[in-house]
Image 1 (cartoon, helix red, strand yellow):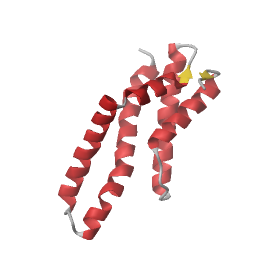
Image 2: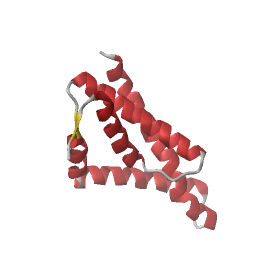
Image 3: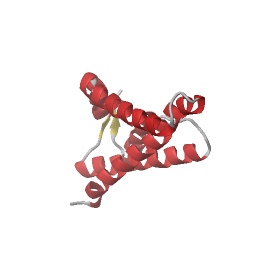
Image 4: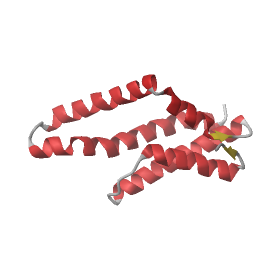
Length: 128
């Protein structure tokens, strides 16, 4: 198994962590700050709603996943794995840097940018 294949699940989990780390505080800050919810119920509500959002989006909007799949055509499976690793690493670094400086981010937009950058770096075709 190439190193890229072993690294991909770790990078995916890190992207999920960074995404939740940056989104959850924004989602619950007003509810906790105003006193409408205490911290623990607000975190539980955010976790349930984030999971439900992902599950419903995957079930109801498969066109988004198809668009991501068809965005870039890499020349080989090795290039695909390397491109995905690079894109996921870019999402992680961008998310952490933006969090550190208090900038709002979108990890999904960062993923599209990372895939496009990987395609340019590896000489792959970006689909119009």
